[in-house]
Length: 114
Image 1: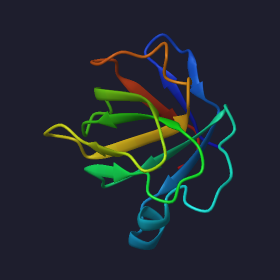
Image 2: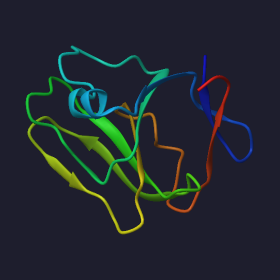
Image 3: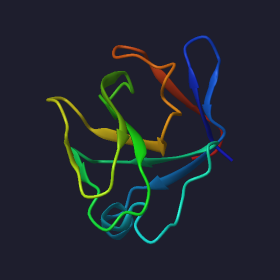
């Protein structure tokens, strides 16, 4: 199982879902009723996301190829859109409130099996 850590080793999420195929990226978190606080989804490649038909809010981090945070959108609610900044290649979606201790510029690290 993979997890996402900050530079100092703090765990951001302890369970990571990966959406790297076209069909998995298109589905993302659609159809779920919630996302556990310890779970996140990495979507790559990805430049923007939408919350159409979603049932719960999420925190979103837009990441560059080195997994540095370019932008954080906290508490993105259903039916909203989030546009990524330039150089975004990856998006991390987590339960709302999960990214409160992360900041733009922070590097993230994926540890474990991918």
